[in-house]
Image (cartoon, rainbow, N blue to C red; front, side, top):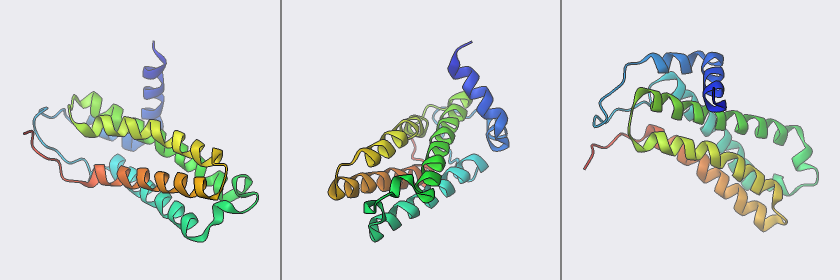
Length: 158
């Protein structure tokens, strides 16, 4: 059994919203359907929005430039929540894939799940205040994108 299948099964069993979303019937590939009201995707929007607010606060306050910032409790909690969000975005991707949907959201969620850890690492690796500010801005943009791709109304195929 591949690791991906085992991981997907474990994640699905750990969150009732994922299991509930997976039980929904498959939709026609050409039907524009919004998932923004489903519990798993509502949760993704709320988590992303909350993390974006934290990042935007750090941008405004310059908090990330303070000594010991990355060892502090606030950053440690943020990193844990960001890792969890990335895993949940992957769950969203897997749910949409299991339903047989063939839309951009499925792919975007996978991409975001892969990009979150990269952006967090870029923040940690930033060598000066300007690089940290850029890394925070890119992380904020990614978290905002996570909200917008879920809440934007689906468009019919052209």
